[in-house]
Image (cartoon, rainbow, N blue to C red; front, side):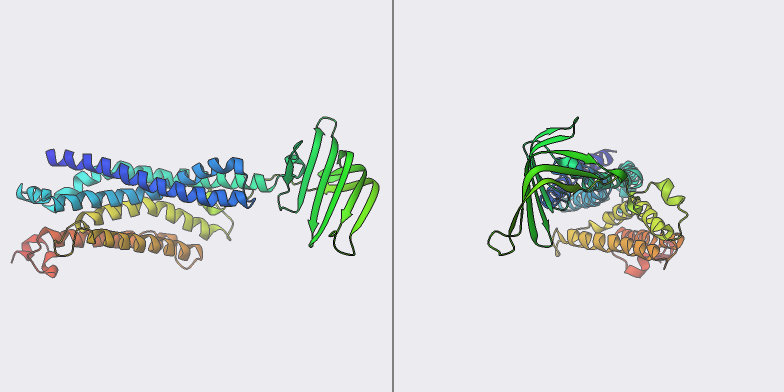
Amino acid sequence: MIFNQALRRELNFTTGGVFLVLVTIMVTTLVIRILGYAANGAVNPEDALVLISLATLGYLAVLLTVSLFVATLIVLVRWYKDSEMIVWFASGLSITNLIRPILQFATPLIIIIALLALFVWPWANRESTLISQRFQQRDDVSMVSAGQFRESAKAERVFFIEELDIDKSEVKNIFVADSKNGKLSVAVSSTGYIKNSEGGEKSIVLHNGRRYEGQPTQPDFRILEFNEYSTKLRSKEALAPAPRDREKTVHELLNESNPDTINPNRAELLWRIGLPLMALGLVLIAIPLAYVNPRLGNYTAMFYAVLIYLIYSNLLNLTQNFVAKGKVSMLIGVWPIHLLALLIAIVLIRNRVNPSLKWWRRQLPAKFSSK
């Protein structure tokens, strides 16, 4: 009982510490990436914090899976290193007695991982896409603010309006710069108004102004005076984009009838189901993997842990890709990798139960291996 309590207490603290480190690394990476998107005009800088939060929520299931695996490994490696496992074995317990308390600790976290993968992951992806699409689909007129230079969605046009009366659709002291096909056109006017046309299109109509076309140093540079000049604004209907498979709920994935998206939907469902199963498999593998051989060093298990995680996750992604392309059925692809992980865990645990026997005799039942 004392050993079980000490084990769970250490697992709690270590899992929390590893999780905080991984979240910090993830948030730092997301800050750099999303701020880069904002600098390039792909997302609204004001939405950067929301997008970082949503992306972090989406990857919590993966981070929690890695945290559980690494924390189990770190705690047991320390127990071997500090000879606490010797006390455990001297008390008449074996490595198999570690399975129950570790699974009691891991089961609630595995349930949380399943809930995050099944529900939070698609919701976070969907919200991120909606925020990005809303910014990309904005009207040029919606971003015009009095006293500010504002750039269009595709960086082809710059507006400046000194005064703006939204109720009367009137504007004063307007500056519009267009860049198309390498040619620059600048129109300025003291007065104008916003015109609504049929079909939802909008335009800014400038009165009694000037228009400059071309480069001032080139012979084709022109200065034109106009009584009325109209420039169209891109009026886009902000429609919600069709959800991708990673943005669909479990209900939508199961009830999809489009033959072109059935396989990708099943592949996405396979990945979401596979994540908690992978967490379980990694925890079971971590129990025998934590054995410390003094001749190999204390951090050899960490090297194997990284290798095992990369192989496991890549095999899961590879299976997902095969199911998405219709090469493998979901019912066939959902179990072999996790069954293989379970078999590897069983073999490694039996190898640690009685290391004095040859490896092939350790796999036999006790009544055969003792002969």
